[in-house]
Amino acid sequence: MSKPPALAKRAAKRKAADDDAIADACTGPNALTTLDLSSKKLGLRDVADALLSLLPKNATRQHPSAKKLVKAFPLVISELERRANVLARESEIDGTRKPIAFLFPAEGKQVPYTIHLPEDTFVGMLKHLNGREIVNVSLVSKAWLAASRLPSLWTKLDRSCGLTNNSRKLNMTAFLKVLERSQFANIKHLEMPHHALQLSKNSISKLAKLLPHLETFSMNSVWGTGHKLKDEHLLALVQAFPKLTALHNIEMWAVTNHGIMSMAKVSKNLQDLRINGSLYYLSDFAVASIAHSLPNLHYFAYTTSRWSYDAARDTLSGEGILSLVRKCRRLEILELEDARNVSKGHFQEIVTIIEEGNEGEFALRKIDLRGYPFVIVEQPFRVVDIAENGAMVI
Image 1 (tube, helix red, strand yellow):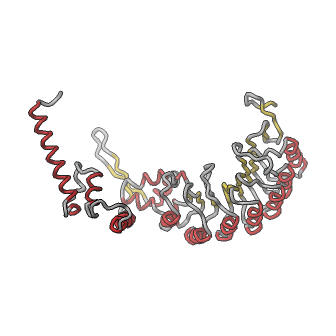
Image 2: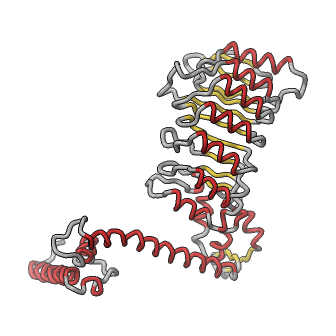
Image 3: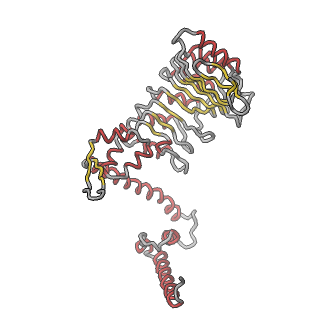
């Protein structure tokens, strides 16, 4: 129902008066001191006008005063983040002094009651949650916040924990600042957030100091968004983390076969290696070198891009994979995707090697193939063709 004309006219006058007052507050000599940021009527344009009133008339971004104003914004943001961290620490400390409580509301004539849990019991429950869920739990109370920040809960940091950089606002300095938190002192598995973060020898050294217990390092699993990891960075990684047993999603965009072989020679503890062929492809010689340097390898995966495949660069054949199976007797899982020079005959030879070996001689229990017109089923191993409708032809 519309307002009567008289009421509508008075409301319009009040709104015009409020707008004039805001405009005066945002453009006068004391614009910032009179600005009421809590006012719902104050818009972002009004705040911008107040800031611009500090500058000479018609000043552009190149004006010295404008440059100072622009450079001040990061300092404001940094101070707000510092205050937030201080408040979070205070809340966490306060939470350690309070019991972990579950309040159950009254049902019918019952009286509400509260159950207090020991911290160990509560933490045991939280261990069944992923990182995102633990963060949600931390919002319940200060006591829950303190419990959620315990290092024993944070042994893994990846996308399931909410570690992303889709906005591309996270740089390496900010990422290292996040890892300085005491809750991440026991991280064993780290997946780098994609976009914008570039590893260097300096940043790798800082990561190693912050994460002394790291065992698994993963670049990321999003095609086309990987860091341009180079040979020297890959070598620095395995040298900086002596406990490293797994390297995942190593994209060969700037990493060459020489870099892969150099890495394998110095990383004697590596048991899990997963590589993505991109601009460069693994060669038979590189895979044979991996097999020689890493005889305790348990998991090996190699993927090529079907969208940007270059047959001239792909020199990995079945001979390289056969050498890996023969020398890495502890290999349990072999994954290959679109390694097109590894034929059905080569896989049949692998099956024969496993069958003719003594019991327990080979640990291989799974061969996962993608991009082939056949699969390998287990118990016992055998090569099975795939029909056009996707069904296996036994």
